[in-house]
Amino acid sequence: VQPPFLCLITPEGLCTEKYSEEAKRIILSRIGLAVEGGVSLVQLRDKTATREELATMGKRIRDVVDRSSAIFMVNGDLDVAIACKADGVHLPEAQVQDFINSYKNKKFNGVLGCSVHSSEAALRAMEVKADYIVVGTMFKTNSHPGKVPEGPESLKKIKLDMLDHSQNTKDSNGAEEKLPLVCGVGGIDGDNCIEVLKNGGDGVAMISTLCFADRPKDKAEEVTGFMAAFLTAYNTVNKIGKKRVDILSPSFSATSQSISEQGIHFNEGAKAVNLTFSEINAMKVAELKDELRKLGLPVSGRKIELSSRLKNAYGLDR
Image (tube, rainbow, N blue to C red; front, side, top):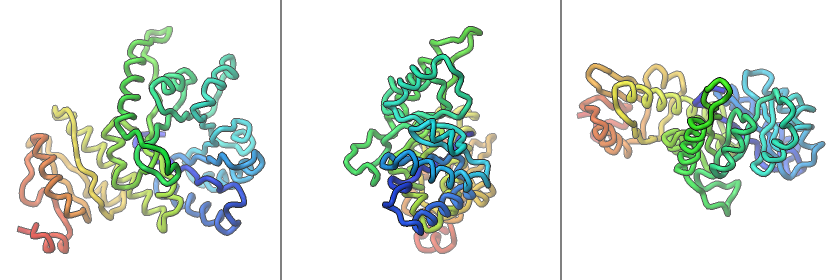
């Protein structure tokens, strides 16, 4: 998995009788479409399911994911992950220590993910050589309605603590300990996913935004395209000597292809930025220009291009 990456987590109860067979087929179809749209990791998670139900659904998802290069993970049960030929297992935070105790003398060759809610848990995930960690909860979410979100700032703290640990922990060759990729989860959609990346995230995980979307492929393309455009801007700004980039996350309708062709372009010599989307939430335009000016990047005239309809509607075509 390469950043920025998008993870799809299945809804609770999918493996059980809570979902009719027809409803299960619809969700499986949406998973397939979301993968076509850019989802690179699918995680089967259902704490209400029996092991048999989990394995049965896992095999069905495996068939869907097999048509792509996406990674398939099973949450919380290594035996089920092996049974349905998953690419790896995702450990809930409470299982990480058990995994350390059970496999400390064995080599695990699959992809390993861990859920964490603290820096201490993240360091335990590093101990088991996790490939990625999922940090929650970013925002208010329907899947955990009573949960108070820690916010993206919690992810930033965890990543900084892991970085400090890595720099102070060397292997036998003197190399720093490798950091896992960091993924934010909880109430994430196309408008707030950038907040996760701005705080050090390498990707985001979604449930409802993808599994219950009318057009999951388009939604996945929108999110992955926007994250890629943001990281392009972030990396380019850093290259020209800026310390950070704060670009607001406007709502827009565009495919990843149109973003890559028209997205965020920099003129390094002039240190100017040109953002062009097929459509951008006009209410954000003034704020967006202010943010760019704070970075010392000149914004003038047609540097931010809108559709003709929006230009006329908001008097931005002058």
